[in-house]
Image 1: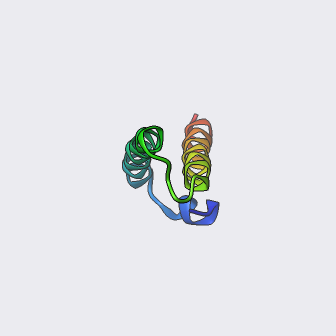
Image 2 (image 1 turned 90 degrees about the horizontal axis):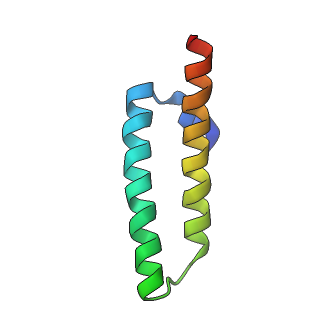
Length: 65
């Protein structure tokens, strides 16, 4: 997910999407530990997407103060 797509989401949608992505990330890491994924770079992409979402939430929080 690109930063432009993340910025288009409302704060509530962003929080909801972040929770979903974090659950997906934990599941993916667990599955990778048991049996290797075909494309382990998916973990890296998902982790970076989560970081982008958290960064956007933090920016919104600072701008509201």
